[in-house]
Image (cartoon, rainbow, N blue to C red; front, side, top):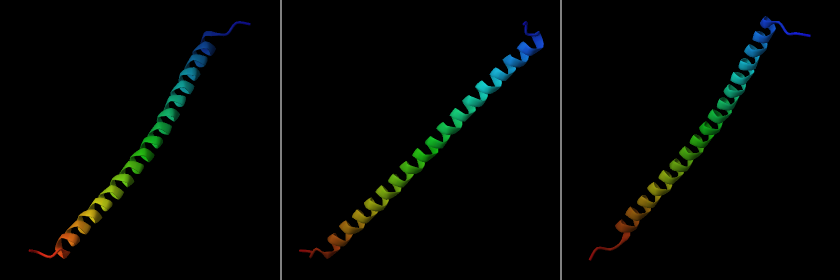
Length: 69
């Protein structure tokens, strides 16, 4: 049984469609992972900033509590 040219063209188009769809899904998954990583890094940076701010405040309080000579 021979496949007509139009059916071969349809098969080729459908292969391209499914390849593009798979690539898009892969990109969406990667984008989701990158967004999650960015959110995690921002949380770490914020926590670091709060800790550094707290340490600075502690250092200032300690310096003010020391008697001057």
